[in-house]
Image (tube, rainbow, N blue to C red; front, top):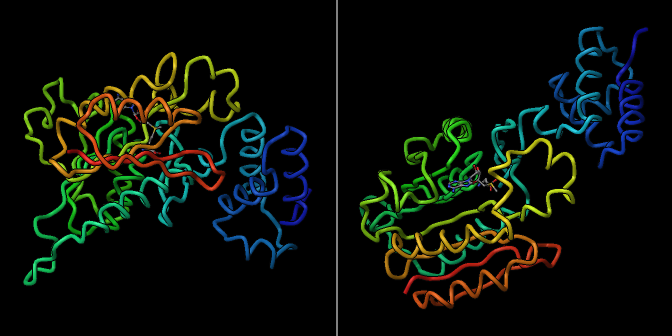
Length: 303
Ligand SMILES: C[S@@+](CC[C@H](N)C(=O)[O-])C[C@H]1O[C@@H](n2cnc3c(N)ncnc32)[C@H](O)[C@@H]1O
Protein backbone atom coordinates (compact mmCIF):
# COMPACT_ATOMS: atom_id res chain seq x y z
CA UNK A 1 0.00 0.00 0.00
CA UNK A 2 1.48 3.38 -0.91
CA UNK A 3 1.25 6.02 1.77
CA UNK A 4 1.44 9.78 1.51
CA UNK A 5 2.70 12.24 4.14
CA UNK A 6 -0.77 13.10 5.42
CA UNK A 7 -1.82 9.46 5.82
CA UNK A 8 1.49 8.49 7.45
CA UNK A 9 1.18 11.31 9.99
CA UNK A 10 -2.44 10.48 10.73
CA UNK A 11 -1.64 6.80 11.30
CA UNK A 12 1.40 7.59 13.46
CA UNK A 13 -0.58 10.06 15.60
CA UNK A 14 -3.28 7.44 16.16
CA UNK A 15 -0.71 4.79 17.22
CA UNK A 16 1.10 7.21 19.55
CA UNK A 17 -2.13 8.49 21.08
CA UNK A 18 -3.27 4.90 21.70
CA UNK A 19 0.04 4.28 23.50
CA UNK A 20 -0.60 7.41 25.66
CA UNK A 21 2.52 9.15 24.42
CA UNK A 22 2.57 12.77 25.65
CA UNK A 23 2.59 15.38 22.83
CA UNK A 24 1.85 12.61 20.33
CA UNK A 25 1.23 15.04 17.42
CA UNK A 26 4.61 16.69 17.88
CA UNK A 27 6.33 13.30 18.21
CA UNK A 28 4.75 12.04 14.97
CA UNK A 29 5.88 15.20 13.16
CA UNK A 30 9.43 15.20 14.55
CA UNK A 31 9.98 11.56 13.65
CA UNK A 32 8.72 12.06 10.08
CA UNK A 33 10.84 15.21 9.69
CA UNK A 34 13.83 13.14 10.85
CA UNK A 35 13.19 10.23 8.47
CA UNK A 36 12.55 12.45 5.43
CA UNK A 37 15.18 15.10 6.29
CA UNK A 38 12.51 17.81 5.89
CA UNK A 39 11.16 20.58 8.10
CA UNK A 40 7.60 20.98 9.40
CA UNK A 41 6.65 23.51 6.72
CA UNK A 42 7.54 20.98 4.04
CA UNK A 43 5.39 18.28 5.69
CA UNK A 44 2.32 20.52 5.69
CA UNK A 45 2.87 21.95 2.20
CA UNK A 46 3.43 18.49 0.66
CA UNK A 47 0.71 16.35 2.27
CA UNK A 48 0.26 14.24 -0.88
CA UNK A 49 3.92 13.46 -1.40
CA UNK A 50 4.37 9.66 -1.41
CA UNK A 51 6.59 7.90 1.11
CA UNK A 52 8.72 5.20 -0.51
CA UNK A 53 8.56 1.77 1.21
CA UNK A 54 11.97 2.23 2.88
CA UNK A 55 10.98 5.58 4.38
CA UNK A 56 7.60 4.26 5.51
CA UNK A 57 9.28 1.22 7.10
CA UNK A 58 11.86 3.38 8.89
CA UNK A 59 9.17 5.78 10.06
CA UNK A 60 6.83 3.20 11.56
CA UNK A 61 9.78 1.41 13.21
CA UNK A 62 10.58 4.68 15.04
CA UNK A 63 6.92 5.25 15.85
CA UNK A 64 6.81 1.76 17.43
CA UNK A 65 9.89 2.54 19.55
CA UNK A 66 8.38 5.87 20.64
CA UNK A 67 5.12 4.09 21.50
CA UNK A 68 7.15 1.67 23.63
CA UNK A 69 8.56 4.61 25.63
CA UNK A 70 11.85 5.69 24.01
CA UNK A 71 12.13 9.49 24.08
CA UNK A 72 11.78 11.20 20.70
CA UNK A 73 15.14 12.95 21.16
CA UNK A 74 17.03 9.64 21.45
CA UNK A 75 15.33 8.48 18.24
CA UNK A 76 16.17 11.64 16.28
CA UNK A 77 19.54 12.08 18.07
CA UNK A 78 19.08 15.77 18.76
CA UNK A 79 17.68 18.41 21.11
CA UNK A 80 17.78 22.19 21.00
CA UNK A 81 19.17 24.09 23.99
CA UNK A 82 19.87 27.84 24.15
CA UNK A 83 18.98 27.96 20.41
CA UNK A 84 21.84 25.54 19.62
CA UNK A 85 21.30 21.98 18.37
CA UNK A 86 22.89 19.28 20.55
CA UNK A 87 23.56 15.65 19.70
CA UNK A 88 21.98 13.39 22.32
CA UNK A 89 22.21 9.64 22.87
CA UNK A 90 21.06 7.45 25.77
CA UNK A 91 24.50 8.18 27.34
CA UNK A 92 23.38 11.71 28.25
CA UNK A 93 20.45 13.46 29.85
CA UNK A 94 18.24 15.23 27.30
CA UNK A 95 18.77 18.96 27.95
CA UNK A 96 15.65 20.55 29.48
CA UNK A 97 14.33 24.07 28.78
CA UNK A 98 14.36 24.97 32.50
CA UNK A 99 18.14 24.42 32.59
CA UNK A 100 18.47 27.52 30.39
CA UNK A 101 17.77 29.50 33.59
CA UNK A 102 21.24 28.43 34.81
CA UNK A 103 22.78 30.24 31.82
CA UNK A 104 20.54 33.29 32.33
CA UNK A 105 21.45 33.59 36.01
CA UNK A 106 25.18 33.07 35.33
CA UNK A 107 25.24 35.72 32.57
CA UNK A 108 23.22 38.07 34.71
CA UNK A 109 25.63 37.76 37.65
CA UNK A 110 28.69 38.16 35.40
CA UNK A 111 27.11 41.11 33.59
CA UNK A 112 26.49 42.89 36.87
CA UNK A 113 30.26 42.71 37.42
CA UNK A 114 31.00 44.99 34.46
CA UNK A 115 33.88 42.74 33.35
CA UNK A 116 36.83 44.82 32.18
CA UNK A 117 37.75 44.58 28.46
CA UNK A 118 41.36 44.79 27.27
CA UNK A 119 41.45 47.83 24.96
CA UNK A 120 43.97 46.21 22.58
CA UNK A 121 42.72 42.62 22.24
CA UNK A 122 39.05 43.20 23.07
CA UNK A 123 39.26 40.25 25.48
CA UNK A 124 38.02 40.38 29.06
CA UNK A 125 40.94 41.18 31.27
CA UNK A 126 41.82 38.77 32.79
CA UNK A 127 39.99 35.95 30.88
CA UNK A 128 37.18 34.14 32.67
CA UNK A 129 37.79 30.69 34.16
CA UNK A 130 34.62 28.61 34.27
CA UNK A 131 33.71 25.03 35.27
CA UNK A 132 30.60 22.99 34.43
CA UNK A 133 30.15 20.01 36.77
CA UNK A 134 28.29 16.98 35.38
CA UNK A 135 28.31 18.30 31.84
CA UNK A 136 26.32 15.46 30.21
CA UNK A 137 25.67 16.52 26.62
CA UNK A 138 27.84 19.60 27.28
CA UNK A 139 24.85 21.90 26.88
CA UNK A 140 25.82 24.32 29.70
CA UNK A 141 29.55 24.38 28.86
CA UNK A 142 28.95 24.85 25.12
CA UNK A 143 26.25 27.51 25.59
CA UNK A 144 28.51 29.44 28.00
CA UNK A 145 31.47 29.14 25.62
CA UNK A 146 29.19 30.49 22.90
CA UNK A 147 28.06 33.45 25.03
CA UNK A 148 31.45 34.21 26.58
CA UNK A 149 33.96 34.13 23.71
CA UNK A 150 36.95 34.61 25.98
CA UNK A 151 36.05 32.09 28.70
CA UNK A 152 38.24 29.05 29.31
CA UNK A 153 35.98 26.21 30.48
CA UNK A 154 36.53 22.93 32.32
CA UNK A 155 33.67 20.44 31.91
CA UNK A 156 33.61 17.38 34.16
CA UNK A 157 31.53 14.24 34.25
CA UNK A 158 31.79 10.88 35.99
CA UNK A 159 30.63 9.20 32.76
CA UNK A 160 33.17 8.70 29.97
CA UNK A 161 30.46 7.98 27.33
CA UNK A 162 28.75 11.28 28.26
CA UNK A 163 32.04 13.16 27.85
CA UNK A 164 32.42 11.71 24.33
CA UNK A 165 29.06 13.25 23.36
CA UNK A 166 29.91 16.56 25.08
CA UNK A 167 33.21 16.72 23.14
CA UNK A 168 31.34 16.14 19.86
CA UNK A 169 28.89 18.94 20.71
CA UNK A 170 31.78 21.30 21.48
CA UNK A 171 33.31 20.49 18.07
CA UNK A 172 29.93 20.94 16.36
CA UNK A 173 29.65 24.46 17.81
CA UNK A 174 33.31 25.36 17.23
CA UNK A 175 34.19 25.88 20.91
CA UNK A 176 36.24 22.70 21.54
CA UNK A 177 39.50 24.69 21.75
CA UNK A 178 38.20 26.47 24.88
CA UNK A 179 36.67 23.52 26.75
CA UNK A 180 38.74 20.92 28.58
CA UNK A 181 36.78 17.74 29.31
CA UNK A 182 37.73 15.82 32.45
CA UNK A 183 36.41 12.48 33.72
CA UNK A 184 36.22 12.82 37.52
CA UNK A 185 33.94 12.92 40.56
CA UNK A 186 32.41 16.45 40.77
CA UNK A 187 35.37 18.89 40.59
CA UNK A 188 37.91 16.18 41.35
CA UNK A 189 39.08 17.96 44.49
CA UNK A 190 39.66 14.72 46.39
CA UNK A 191 41.19 12.84 43.45
CA UNK A 192 44.22 13.05 41.18
CA UNK A 193 42.30 14.96 38.50
CA UNK A 194 44.02 17.95 36.83
CA UNK A 195 41.72 20.20 38.87
CA UNK A 196 42.86 18.88 42.25
CA UNK A 197 46.01 20.96 42.80
CA UNK A 198 44.45 24.10 41.35
CA UNK A 199 44.39 27.17 43.58
CA UNK A 200 41.09 28.97 44.18
CA UNK A 201 41.04 30.61 40.75
CA UNK A 202 37.70 29.92 39.09
CA UNK A 203 35.36 32.85 38.34
CA UNK A 204 32.21 30.80 37.74
CA UNK A 205 31.02 27.25 38.43
CA UNK A 206 27.71 25.99 37.04
CA UNK A 207 26.03 22.64 37.51
CA UNK A 208 22.80 20.80 36.93
CA UNK A 209 23.58 17.87 39.24
CA UNK A 210 21.57 14.66 39.57
CA UNK A 211 18.92 15.58 42.15
CA UNK A 212 16.08 13.07 42.09
CA UNK A 213 15.64 10.98 45.27
CA UNK A 214 15.75 7.21 44.91
CA UNK A 215 12.21 6.81 46.27
CA UNK A 216 10.85 9.12 43.53
CA UNK A 217 11.94 6.60 40.88
CA UNK A 218 8.49 4.98 40.64
CA UNK A 219 6.81 8.35 40.04
CA UNK A 220 8.97 9.27 37.03
CA UNK A 221 7.56 9.03 33.49
CA UNK A 222 8.74 5.80 31.80
CA UNK A 223 10.61 7.89 29.19
CA UNK A 224 12.84 9.23 31.97
CA UNK A 225 13.06 6.26 34.35
CA UNK A 226 13.68 3.57 31.74
CA UNK A 227 15.79 5.49 29.21
CA UNK A 228 17.77 8.39 30.66
CA UNK A 229 21.08 7.55 32.42
CA UNK A 230 20.75 6.53 36.09
CA UNK A 231 23.82 8.62 37.05
CA UNK A 232 22.24 11.70 35.49
CA UNK A 233 19.02 11.36 37.46
CA UNK A 234 19.55 10.13 40.99
CA UNK A 235 21.33 12.18 43.65
CA UNK A 236 20.98 9.67 46.50
CA UNK A 237 18.35 8.59 49.04
CA UNK A 238 17.01 12.15 49.53
CA UNK A 239 18.21 13.67 46.26
CA UNK A 240 20.14 16.56 47.85
CA UNK A 241 23.25 14.59 48.88
CA UNK A 242 25.37 15.78 45.97
CA UNK A 243 24.77 19.49 46.71
CA UNK A 244 26.63 19.48 50.04
CA UNK A 245 29.75 17.96 48.43
CA UNK A 246 29.50 20.19 45.39
CA UNK A 247 29.13 23.41 47.41
CA UNK A 248 32.16 22.38 49.52
CA UNK A 249 34.34 21.67 46.47
CA UNK A 250 33.18 24.84 44.71
CA UNK A 251 34.11 26.84 47.83
CA UNK A 252 37.65 25.49 47.55
CA UNK A 253 38.09 26.29 43.84
CA UNK A 254 36.27 29.62 43.36
CA UNK A 255 38.30 32.75 43.85
CA UNK A 256 36.89 35.32 46.30
CA UNK A 257 33.98 36.95 44.48
CA UNK A 258 33.56 33.86 42.25
CA UNK A 259 30.01 32.71 41.51
CA UNK A 260 28.32 29.31 41.92
CA UNK A 261 25.08 28.67 39.99
CA UNK A 262 23.19 25.40 40.58
CA UNK A 263 19.97 23.99 39.17
CA UNK A 264 17.60 22.89 41.94
CA UNK A 265 15.40 19.83 42.14
CA UNK A 266 11.71 20.16 42.79
CA UNK A 267 11.24 21.07 46.47
CA UNK A 268 14.96 21.22 47.34
CA UNK A 269 15.50 24.99 47.56
CA UNK A 270 15.15 25.27 51.38
CA UNK A 271 17.63 22.50 52.11
CA UNK A 272 20.18 23.69 49.56
CA UNK A 273 19.90 27.30 50.72
CA UNK A 274 20.68 26.11 54.29
CA UNK A 275 23.88 24.44 53.04
CA UNK A 276 25.20 27.81 51.83
CA UNK A 277 24.40 29.47 55.14
CA UNK A 278 25.96 26.66 57.22
CA UNK A 279 29.27 26.97 55.35
CA UNK A 280 29.51 30.72 56.15
CA UNK A 281 31.74 31.37 53.14
CA UNK A 282 29.02 32.58 50.78
CA UNK A 283 27.20 35.88 50.21
CA UNK A 284 24.40 37.14 47.95
CA UNK A 285 22.50 33.84 47.89
CA UNK A 286 19.56 34.14 45.48
CA UNK A 287 16.87 31.83 44.14
CA UNK A 288 15.31 32.15 40.67
CA UNK A 289 11.97 30.55 39.78
CA UNK A 290 11.33 28.81 36.47
CA UNK A 291 8.38 29.65 34.21
CA UNK A 292 6.17 27.29 36.22
CA UNK A 293 6.98 29.27 39.40
CA UNK A 294 9.16 26.47 40.85
CA UNK A 295 12.43 27.57 42.56
CA UNK A 296 14.85 26.31 39.91
CA UNK A 297 18.25 27.97 40.28
CA UNK A 298 20.29 28.96 43.32
CA UNK A 299 23.29 31.26 42.97
CA UNK A 300 25.82 32.53 45.50
CA UNK A 301 29.08 34.43 45.66
CA UNK A 302 32.24 33.16 47.37
CA UNK A 303 33.35 35.53 50.10
C1 LIG B 1 21.26 16.02 35.50
S1 LIG B 1 22.58 15.56 34.43
C2 LIG B 1 22.98 17.14 33.72
C3 LIG B 1 23.61 17.07 32.36
C4 LIG B 1 23.73 18.44 31.68
N1 LIG B 1 24.59 19.33 32.45
C5 LIG B 1 22.37 19.06 31.50
O1 LIG B 1 22.06 20.03 32.21
O2 LIG B 1 21.59 18.58 30.67
C6 LIG B 1 23.86 15.26 35.59
C7 LIG B 1 25.21 14.84 35.01
O3 LIG B 1 26.13 14.68 36.09
C8 LIG B 1 26.91 13.52 35.91
N2 LIG B 1 27.31 13.07 37.25
C9 LIG B 1 26.62 12.34 38.16
N3 LIG B 1 27.32 12.18 39.28
C10 LIG B 1 28.49 12.83 39.09
C11 LIG B 1 29.65 13.03 39.88
N4 LIG B 1 29.72 12.53 41.13
N5 LIG B 1 30.68 13.74 39.36
C12 LIG B 1 30.61 14.25 38.10
N6 LIG B 1 29.55 14.09 37.31
C13 LIG B 1 28.50 13.41 37.78
C14 LIG B 1 26.00 12.55 35.18
O4 LIG B 1 26.76 11.57 34.49
C15 LIG B 1 25.22 13.51 34.26
O5 LIG B 1 25.88 13.66 33.03
